[in-house]
Image (tube, rainbow, N blue to C red; front, side):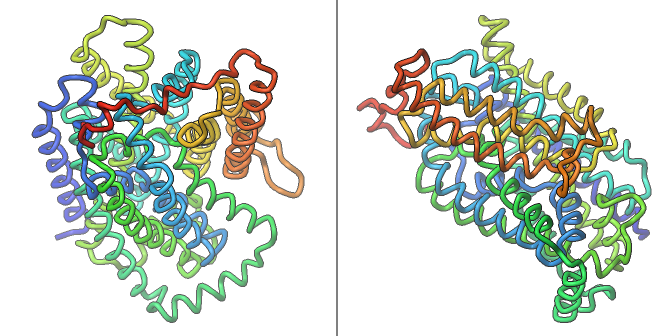
Length: 510
């Protein structure tokens, strides 16, 4: 069988499989609650793999792994390790149990609803809705671009055709099956990703360009030394590690994964599973990217987004393994795309269209509207994906603004009762504004730069980290200042943390 036939056959099997899962779960999407959080009884394996598959997509494998490997050599592996330790292990320890408890107790289905109930502010909910829907779009678009670069190299097909295939698979899964279908699909896709990455590592390491693990490591260490990395390089690497690790703590589609966990015991198990999964997927992906200098003396003509695709094409990987690798990348991309789409679309429907415009809309009608919005979101993502913005830039803009806006007020709300509305607004708006310059310069001032550093449009991770840190400071300082002066917005909502006696005795699952 030819390479193209093998790969197209595997893609066909995958799409049929996704269609079957969507159809089998179609009865579970009759109302908006089931569409967004399922039955709130997800186990550890399903929750952890759903979290991991939403975390890592072709954006990581293609965009970040290739770019960091080319820029930092073997040091790029630290990004994958940081993702596993900070983005998975520590995130689950700090966030999962408390998020599960409060969202199930107060029947919260989205991050805007969380802010509304914590700070008793309709305005804050609407601001969160707007930021989530608008700035998840470039992240969604980056997922398209990550996979299309692979398909254009391996299958020699037009990138737009690939984007349409991904969009169709994601829409079918979402419209037919909703959140329950995505959880089950993510479980299977997570297993495919886990096995696929292990196979891919072995195949790349055994290629002629690498020459085995021992020789490959020795050679890439030499290549890394030849890069002559300086302070600015290590600063950029650190910013990438922090943004891609701690940035997930404020991303609504990641936090959403905690809402449906069955109980605290499943949280503990999910913490271990998620960490191991992330270490293999992210560590393996960035390790492969770190070997790019063994394949190329100069950057490929198409740019950094084509490093890994051309590595796979030239590594002499057997056709059947190429099919597995492509399914790995499609699985990673579709799972991330569905998580982003369902979060953005359900948030817009529940927290604006239904809550603000059509308050008498039934839960069943809201589910239908959400499916329509899902389709619109996918189309908008496709349009943005056709721009010439690199994958890494798209993702960093999205992550920077979302995590800069939401991480501090969300995390502090879980642990600090004295965070008030004024402090939350300061942290949310302040983080948003601080993270905004890179995308603004990309659109309007592409040549603007910070002397001795880089063009501002290329500094998405730097501004993202700055936004996250300063947002915490703004939340704390403004909350204390307003409370001391007894200004409007200084009241605290202690009822948010109160558990009624009847609820204390209730079962963990909802």
